[in-house]
Amino acid sequence: MNIQGFMTANCLDLEKLKATPVSQAPFDHMIIPGFLKPEALDAIERDYPQIDRPGSLPLGSLTYGGAFEAMIDAIQGPEMTALMAEKFGVDLADRPTMVTVRARCRPKDGQIHTDSDGKLVTVLIYMNGGWEADGGRLRLLNGPESLDNYAAEVPPDKGTMLAFRCTPDAWHGHKSFEGPRRAIQLNWVVSDRYLTRERIRHKVSAFLKKFKLAS
Image 1 (cartoon, rainbow, N blue to C red):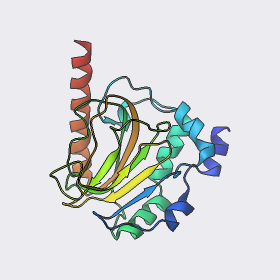
Image 2 (image 1 turned 90 degrees about the vertical axis):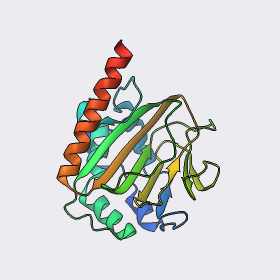
Image 3 (image 1 turned 30 degrees about the horizontal axis):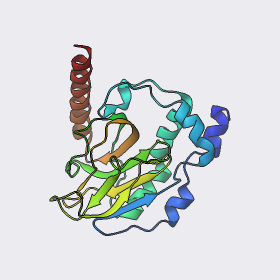
Image 4 (image 1 turned 30 degrees about the vertical axis):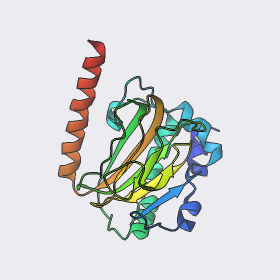
């Protein structure tokens, strides 16, 4: 499939998104296997950024191919934004977006947390083969006390999307895993000021990780 055809066909299954209800336990979320269309997966995987270090890296610091770029454009597009706003009852009009990308997981990753209050909605799209490991499966938790007290678990399988509204009770995390684990994170955030601050923070963090690996 050439890039023009890829973009024309659209890589997102927005009809599946429209048909998926929001689950309210333990907090508002949707889990959608196959959100990326099967016919688009090979091209997106081929054009995924080549990343040799762990951590969340800002999109602007990465090099990637046309199919991956088309997918990134689509998830930030007006139709996706309108659907997320409708599903979660959040006004996302004119809200800036932030995208970070992961390729590898460290044993310390996945600790229980909530997303910062500058984020309104989080979308995670996974790009891994059939996931067999016990670790690395994101759990939506009933509270911050234990990874074993969860309401839903999301294997990071290729094409699966998790979306949730960022609230003070949106606790999540996963058991320890070390190795390749591809994930794209999209956030609608409160302001351009917050976005600028986060971009600087991610750039500094990415530089320090790269320096540490090189030393």
